[in-house]
Image (tube, rainbow, N blue to C red; front, side, top):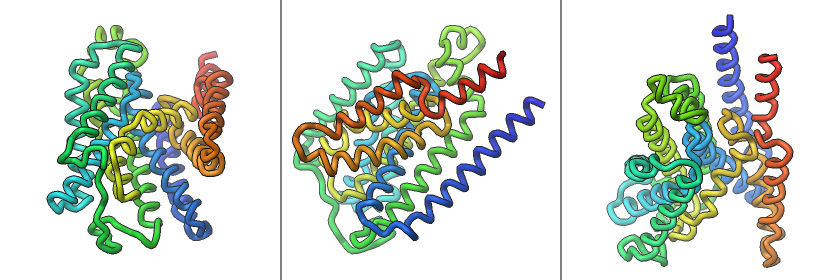
Length: 328
């Protein structure tokens, strides 16, 4: 009976996700303002990125504040392959994802031996080292960055100057893919292993969980999806430099929606992004130019409020209350 209820809940979640995606896909029919469309693109992109971050940090419990490294690798791989070798961005994004997954495995090999705040600090340091490397790498444009050569609107080259709708639908597709990957993993052997590692790595290992390998797998999947998001962002803005794709700000903006919505939950990153990113964009647009950092204060207070009032997040709090009620 419990298994049937579990399968039904998972099926309902999938149906809900498809319905939400269909409803969001219809938004451009009523939303014609370019500024709002741009905000929608960024919201969907960060929903996908936060979902990707959540795979490693939420389900596996390995809190990373260095995901900007993988985001930047995806962005640079996509544009360098396109501008230097003529490789279409579609293949560049996949290549960036593979490179980022390999780097995540290489970084994880020494770092996953660290625990707690030591691991968090290591991810920040490695991401900053990557930023400094790109700032001084002349072949990749160094501090000057890379600009996408404009060759007219084209799906093949994934360039659109007249409309943001193609980017909107790609971002929606990416967010849906990241959600479905998480949904699929959540009920798989890896998903159970990751949650066991998060709760108690030593106990999980004593029960036969291959802790180190499970962490490496989570890092690779998380980095791959994050890098694809970075490649998309590079095409969307048509210009990148190290600071614009690898700064610490990106690592925070991937983590905060999941924190706000609920770390380690299926819907938390999407709900958090739907709330946080529009607030961030509006306050940055209308108050960021004051030079007083009012935009940072607004969403900083929002996250603090959630941390103090509902540390489990918007989605996590009712889920935990339901579990307590069942246990009682």
